[in-house]
Length: 331
Image (cartoon, rainbow, N blue to C red; front, side):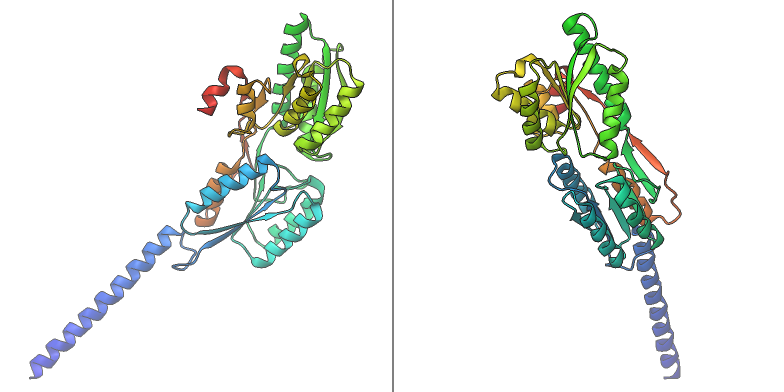
C-alpha cells in the first residue's frame, strides 16, 4: 500500500512537470510570432493619418495600405481623414497620440503646420513614419518618399524633347497647373521641370495656376487659360487628375489636338494616369510611387523587432510612362 501511494505521487509530479513544460513552449511560440512584445491574442495598433482621402492618389494609398496590413494577422489598422485641412489633421493626430498606438503613419497635408504635432508623437514614444510628404523638422522615425525634383526634371525633359520635335528647336508655350500651394511636392515638381526647360529662353510658361490637385478645379482653371491664350503647346499638370481636367476643358473648346498633356502619379486602373496615356489623353505621366509597400515593410519591422533601426530616409524610384510602355504596364 505504501509503495502504491509513493508511485502515485511520482506520477502526479511527472504530470505537473510535463504540464509546465507545455505552457512554456506555447508562450515562447507566441513571442516569436509577435516579436516578443504582445500577449497572446492582442494586436498591434497602427493608425494612419491621411491628409485627404478624396484624391485618387490618396485613395490608392489607403486601399493598398488596408490590404497589406490586413495580411498581418496581429495588426489592428485604422485611417483618419483630414480632408485637406491642417487643423483637422493636427487634432486627429493628437487624438491618436492619446490612444497610444504602436505605430503612427502620417501623410502630412502641409509641411509647416504638421511639424510640431508629429514632434508630440515622437515625444510620446510612438514610432512615427512620415509618408511621401515632408515636414520642416525631422520629427519622425523614418521618412519614406519619392524624389519630386527628379520627377519634375523628367517631365521637363520630356516637354523639351516634344517641343524640339514639334518645331525643330526648343521653343513653345507651356501652361502649368500646380497642386496645393505651399506643399513641398508642388514646389519641387515645378522646380524640377523649370530646371529642364528653363535653359531655353524660347520656351515660355505663359500661365501658372493653382488647382489644389483637383480635376474639377483644374478644368475650370484651364478654361480660363484657354480664353486668354490663343496658342498653347503643352499643359504640365502636377498630378494626373489636373492634367486630365485640363484635357477635358480643351476638348470642350475643340482645342485638345493643339497641345499635349503631361501629368504625374501614374496610377493603375481605368481612371488612372497609365490608362489615360494608353488612350492618348495624356502624352506622358511619371509614376509617383505610393510608398505604401515600404511603409508597411518598415513599420512591421518596427513593431516586431525592437532592435531594428531604420534608415532616416528611404527614396522610392520613379518611371516614365508613354504610349510605348503604357499598355505593358497596364497588363
